[in-house]
Length: 191
Image 1 (cartoon, rainbow, N blue to C red):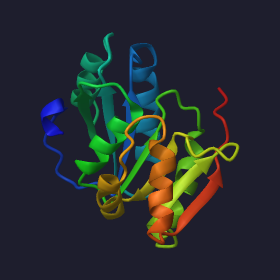
Image 2 (image 1 turned 30 degrees about the vertical axis):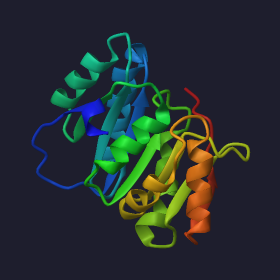
Image 3 (image 1 turned 90 degrees about the horizontal axis):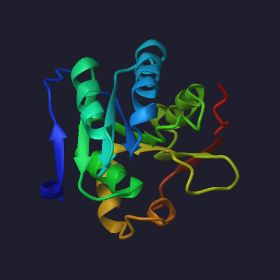
């Protein structure tokens, strides 16, 4: 899997508590502004260290060069490039290579309000949950999930689908493993 992706590395001295993965495909137009807002939110609002991983999935526009620039410009941001499309591939690759204690992902378009992120993380940080999912309308595909990184590393090899049914299969595997899954309503972002 590592041969099919490249990672932009820079020295990050502190291992973050959370790694928020942002899968990106042809998101050049929205990426910079949304990543700067997320970066500011993580730095100003979270009571623990965080990193952003921008996971480009074979974009054909300027998303990858922009992700590299953001990783160089902003502290605690890394860029990951995959040669194949797919949010599931991006999430799996980023989670499996993360050094953080907790891994999460959210969509680049900020379809979920950033203020809900603390609620998503709270059960995991406090030890009251292993997996936490945002849910807009009983939707396993909602692009807003978090889990302990050790659990992600254990579950992801069991998840065979790296396309449309990835989220659902991941949750089924977690449920069958007897993990504590916490669900919260994820409000739509409103500008």
